[in-house]
Length: 507
Ligand code: BG6
Image (cartoon, rainbow, N blue to C red; front, top):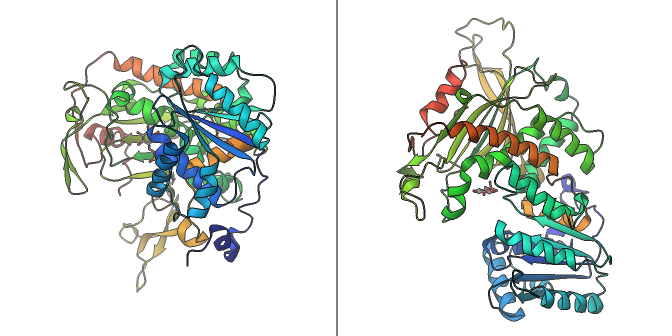
């Protein structure tokens, strides 16, 4: 018999207390772009997971909005199929029936005059029937050009009843200027506290665990600095390609798709000072200081790449330039590696090597803190030849967990030392499934907690760095492709490390 998730948690003493959060107020969640991929693959499955765990408000409505013609009934059927395909939990008809009863659909185009009327009428009705008190979460899961008319219309309709929150999906602009323009547009109708900019990496359990690891343990913080850390390596490797998203990816490239947001957020969380408390402003104040302290890397410190044909997990895959919708002479990068410095007291002169790319050998997101070697190991060189410096490795995904590489004596006569690993694996320790990032982020928005969302100043600092890197790229035309799909990126990325007498972590 399937065991309800709530029951499984009670059986596991380590997971006690995980569900202790206040319930969100009654409200309506309006998803713009409801016919899109994100709604199907992530948002509805996340809402189903929240419903299953009884974490949604008792009085609640979900309204899908898109241009595609559909009825409440056909929308519910469509979303049921999406949940059955993508949810992390087994499908339960009773849970679904309850969630489906709160689902509605409005087919409209906000670019048309009066396009918002039907939505407005439905929300008024739902307020009356369900007592939602005018509380709204608007989720903008639409392409950038569609944002402006929606925001204008929502602004016009604000009537001061209830609270309003706006979730904005990435990309948040294309560069600093467009990000500022977008913020100005949003701020004309919404206060900064009402704007929730999504970076879904912040919703990942392991990313939040980085904060737990650093600030809930007394042993790491004293050594988390330039005196003990030799360097940091952050890897966001994907084995997938661009998954039919050429239109978006040709404009974005790896630098805007991953570096500007996920990667820089991982770096900020790794390097930040301890916040005085875990409130949105305290955490984000510390992150933004790191982003501000990032030095613009010179051209020799940045490597870009694009994949050619190759084999990924035994399957032959086309080159980036052969993907549908990609220009045959495209110079969009699918890989970036860089050496970055955080110019502050804690990290001065400590390199942060980062790399990210598509069609790499495997999917792997890790943060490796490599400590300095023991100053004077009293062993024969030969005895310690298998000994590497200590590394604290945070496995963001897959195989979520943390592992510490330490030197240990090989059993037997003599004093041979090897590196071994002390491992903590989420799955084994907590015996509970890992929530999807979107579950956490949607629930946080319903609760009005913006700690795990990106503030204006963070986004702007992220773009400033990206703009400087991209500006330097305009000067020459790269010789692409320069790495085969299924490898670990271009040789020049290895050179970046070798020049410093270091190398990328082997896998
Ligand atoms: C998205 C990017 O933000 O993150 C995608 O646009 C990428 O290109 C995805 O594949 C990776 O997310 P995850 O959660 O699978 O690591």
